[in-house]
Image: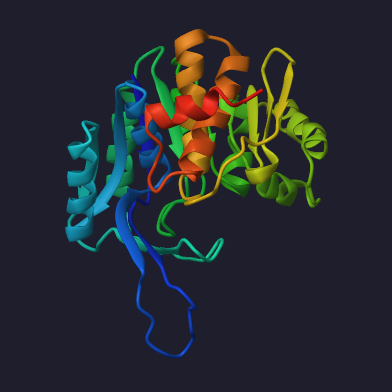
Length: 301
C-alpha cells in the first residue's frame, strides 16, 4: 500500500482576475476550488492511474471537513486526524499571474496529535511505500520528516520525500528511495543558479552522495533530470503544450514516477511517466486524468 502524508492540507481557491488592480475591487473571471497539499495531489494522480493509496495528515474545522469530503468523493481512502480547534487553510492562487499565491498558515498541531500520526506510520509494513510531501505548520518540529524516517528505518519501507531545505537535507542520511527538488530548490541548497539540464546533473549527484537513492529534478519548461540508484542519468526536454495551471504539476510528476516504477520496475519508464504526468497536469484545468497523461506520454521522444 502507498501512504501519502500531507501535514498542512488546504482548499485551493484558484482564480483568474483580468487586469488586476491594487487598492480597488477586482472580480474573478474564472474560479474553482480543489483540495490541495502535495501529498493529497500525489494521492489523486495515483488514483487516476488506478493505484490504491491512503492519505494521512491533519484536518481542522469546516475547511477540513470539505477537504475530506472531496478526497473521499474521488474514492481515495482518507485517514486524517481531526483537530478540535482551528481550521485547515485556504490558499488563493491567481492562475493568470505566474507564481502569484497567498497561502494560509494552517492550524496548530499538538504534540499529542503528532504522536498519534507517528503511531499510524509505525503500523506500516515491509514493502509499503510512504510519501512525505510539502510544508509543515509552524507549530510542528522541523525535524518531523527525519523523525519519521528514524522510526521506520529498519522496516523495509520505501520513502519518497518532496520537500525543501532542511526538511529535505535532514533525511538524506536515511537513504530515501526518491527525492524530487525542482531546479530552483536544488540551486538554493548549494547557492548556485541552475538553468540547464546539464547544470543540474552534478548537484543532483551531490544529493545522491549524501544518501538519496534516486534524485528526480523538475525544471518546468526545461524538462527534467533523473539520476537513478544504478548510476544512470536520464534527461528530457519538456513536452510541448500550453500551460493552463501549474499547481500540482510537481506532485503529479512524483505520482507518475511511482506509477511507472510500480508498473514496470524500470527507472527509464518511471522517468517518462513522471514527466508526462507533470506536464499533463500543467496543461489541464485540474490534476491530469490517466487519459491526458497517456496522450502526453506518447509525445515524449
